[in-house]
Image 1 (cartoon, helix red, strand yellow):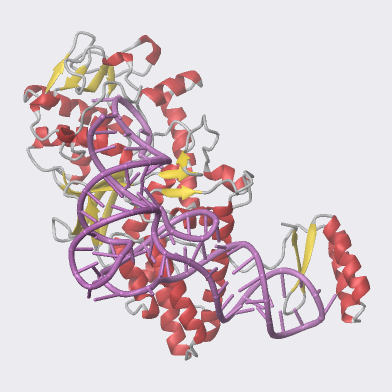
Image 2 (cartoon, rainbow, N blue to C red; image 1 turned 120 degrees about the vertical axis):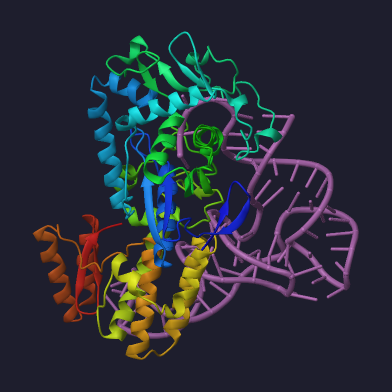
Length: 479
RNA sequence: GGCGAGGUAGCCAAGUGGUAAGGCCGGGCUCUGCAAAAGCUCUAUCGCGGGUUCGAUUCCCGCCCUCGCCUCCA
């Protein structure tokens, strides 16, 4: 499989350094609140990446950390009057629930930052010893950027003119740095941190953000590993700083490949709480959409392209046209799968494990190929629908249908798309409504159209909708 | 100011040096009492101006516009 590499700015073939297992690290969430759909664009596409890798026959080892100690987790746990770990484990669990709902495969390993503070301290000691870090009077330790020749390579910093404080995010605990570009490895204890401090050779304090990833990568993936991934915003400074820390420490190239995912936009602009366009999975589910529908939207654009999540229609109503479209598209995919099942004469296997076994993808080979070429999810999706159109026109033998069905399912597994189950009406229909629907059915059978339509209107007035099917009728909440 | 991405049908979104995938919506048709569902089908010359070329949406130059990032935000 080929993938764009941020460092070299070119598509590169992926092959495991150790010849066996492709080992990669994804920067995980900071667990201090609900993850938003922008976070999930990244995590979902990383998941599609991992699935594609495995379905291509490569063995994968996926590590994704949890940032469960930093200034925000400390601040918000204090505000909530909770112990740090109690606070972060709550949000960690919510994150896991969302990931599962979105059908993301769990990473093989999910190390937590707060459980690796000794590893971080050890690394800082090494950096101080090698002259790449210095401590300040307040008990903080900073990385000396000027000591690392390659600093800025990933983000092409040498070509930039950094505008001091352009992001408006410089915080006051950065006062004691020698140079603005230097960053904290260790931060001295502050009163407002409460119980959240750890002992270190520089006194009590807390770890800096960038270091956790360097320490955990080294611990679980070694000095050099295959690929490192995260959102584009992490290119600078986070990944730049990770490289500086790790490579200054080990003397080895940290990662062979850098995989960055472009942000999601909402209605053409940046998502933010203040703009009122900050969406979580829970909110979208409450609005009547499913996680699978969100996933479909999230993979509908190429990962190096901004994805415009349309939340408001042209009249400004927040009714999520993008998700409504996804609902339709998934419905069609499900119908198609069902028709193939009928033609094949068997239900067949389904699921990621089963997909790994399939070799002949039939008409869907192109789609997997599209994923293998720089993870082109929209192209893959387009090819799926094109194949469907052709297959519908064809007269398949049961054997051919079986092959196509298996191929189709492999691609759905690669994308991690879960198709909606065939709906057989709604479970919570009030008895009174069911009786009316039954009466309408009887009127209809006796060809009393007037009465049948009258009853249907009457039912509609209560918020329910009767639809006829091949065998009879079904009742759903009116949409 | 610097760096980066991008401007393709009503919306979303691929792609290519030889006149542009796919999805949603919408229109038409078929089917069924009607409706719904389903099936079939229709809808663009690719921001603007130059250049290179037999030929550019695709390459180069200029311009306009949008979006993101610029030290702890996926």
